[in-house]
Structure formats: structure tokens, C-alpha cells
Image (cartoon, rainbow, N blue to C red):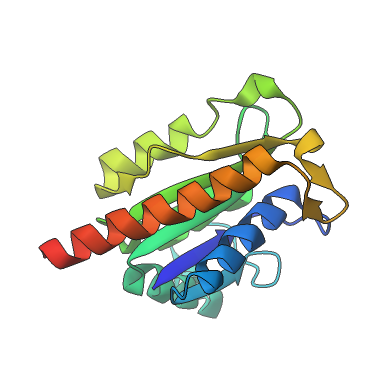
Length: 175
């Protein structure tokens, strides 16, 4: 199962559009997938204590733990993934161990292209995740209304899904 996580709280989120495009592509190719929207399933702030008992935290942790791969979509704020995405990782921590992770980022401009590297490094070093080297970085010009309007980004969606499934399948068969 591939888990697609949308980490934006914005009602007209572009990163959610990317997440939906990946989820739709997974469905098209017949891959089992789950969609988890943090706007619909709010998490408490990580307090290092009681927040882990929250039912949404437990649900997300279980989905991550049982996923073969994770496609993680976040908006870029201040040259980094958003606080909601970071909070989700902090709350679910060890569930990420050994997972294949693909990233989808939506930003206001080209200047934050490397903004996913902090979370990629953290996931690799802290949880030994395998980061899919191809990721999606899209800016406002790639969208029209609530849809992707850029054929290049659509191609990247297809490639990210394909690579994530291929790597996750290979690693699952290897264990």
C-alpha cells in the first residue's frame, strides 16, 4: 500500500492538488493506496508527552507503519516544508523507519527548489528512509484553478509514482 499524505491546511492548496494527482495515478495503475489529508485530520502540536495519544496521531502512525511507500506533499513556507508536515513527522517518528518516501512540494517561486533536502536528510538519517531521488517541485504557473495545468509536472507525477512503487516493491521483496 502506498500512503499519500497532504500536509497543507490551505483550502485551495496546490500541494494537495499534487497529492491528489499522485493518488489518482496510483489508482489508475491499480496500486493500493490511501489518502490522508492533515487538513481533514488535524494533529495536536507535538509536546513530547501527551500528544502521541491523540486518535489522529495513532491513526496516521498506523498508516505510515503499514505503508510500503509514502508520497508526502507539502507547501513550501520560508524555504522549508510547512510546520504541519514537520509536526506530523515528529508525532509519528519511528513509524517512518525504513520507508520509501517521495516528496511533492508546491512553492511560490523557483528560489526554494532545494527546500525538501532538510526533511529528506532528516528522514534518511533519523529513520533510515529511502528517499526517492526524483521529487516534484511546482510553482503557481503549474496550476489552473484546482488542477495541474503543466504537462511537465504531470509527467513528474507519473514518474514519481512509478519510481516510488518500483522501489517500494523491490525493497518489500528483498525482506
